Image 1 (cartoon, rainbow, N blue to C red):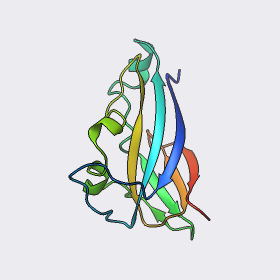
Image 2 (image 1 turned 120 degrees about the horizontal axis):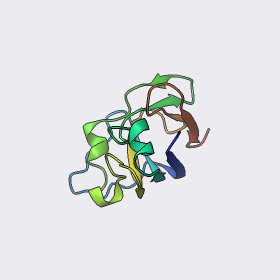
Image 3 (image 1 turned 180 degrees about the vertical axis):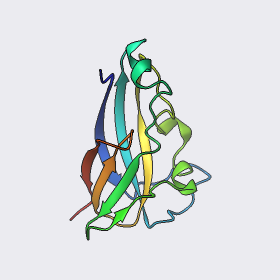
Length: 129
């Protein structure tokens, strides 16, 4: 049973960083992905996700020219926003959370891909094509 429901509510290219420790993107552009997520109850959730669920990994970006960037997390992505704006690192059973993930991508337009387990995944277009 899939006990995780999430929605990407907004995608913003080149958001304004709010952290005093912010640094420029390594790959060229930050993309802020706003997420709302709800997890199922124990014990069903923990049997599917024994270590919780995180949105801070499992992302890649396909640029508008078709080139795939498999590494879209950098030290700069963790330092762009205040921690209160970020989605929880590990979401556990029976939680409802909202926040942002910052990605560091080479192109201001393309497709974001998220796969928490490395197999099936989701895609969203971002920026202007």
